[in-house]
Image (cartoon, rainbow, N blue to C red; front, side, top):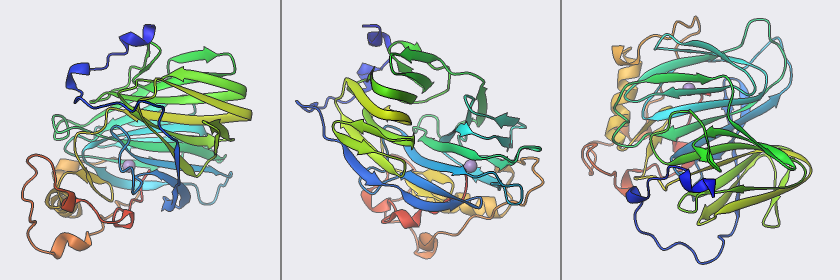
Length: 341
Ligand code: MN
């Protein structure tokens, strides 16, 4: 099987007993959130699944109908500790960041920004485009070894594809069946856009990964359960393939990876390991600290909301060394507001 060359670092994977049977599909509704003036379906994080591999955030936006008066736009805002992955099915967005990147992303193209210790960016409407917008923005948590590192930006004009009898797979991140994406990732990870046309498709998966599925268009059936936009289908660990059926046509993302190394603390656009470092990032951004740079956008900078726990006094679990304790994580999804794409 070509899949054996998928580049999974077996040596880094803790010994776990894989389930002896295929895991059940767990379907959970996405939350509705408001981003840049548009309603989005936030499939990740979920209370029961804050991460799937290193995937820690998934905002499905649109389709937002064509509008010339109030297009989706998000002013300059910062990030830490993640890669942002932007993938459109329809429309266009202009990305500007503090590295000097200025890049329009359109359907079939992939933007991947690495925050490392600090970055800032803006997402603007594209001059002359007033059509519909439909897409997803994903965040990938960076591991301890890279999360304080340099920021970066990649634009991939075309993604490697696999033709299937009843569809097509575009490999956005990682590899499928030996077909490898050039996009950056710091942990064993996969992201695939799967198109299913009136039939059944099967793609091989890495059984040491956990996987989930987000349907962007149409509806799909997996293990006898119907999955449609507005939900996360968690597929668990231990699957060596995924079979998806659709009566009409469906577009969906399959996301997976090695279970992430540690719990995350997420607040607004910051992803870290402790509340203290998040408070430091909020304070730095709101003070205009140099570490976040300038995006070159003419839109207004978005101030960071101050977390309610920033005034609770010193943390009981000190420092950002090592894994955060369970107590250090937000108690509720509502504690992680985000108004960015
Ligand atoms: Mn952003």
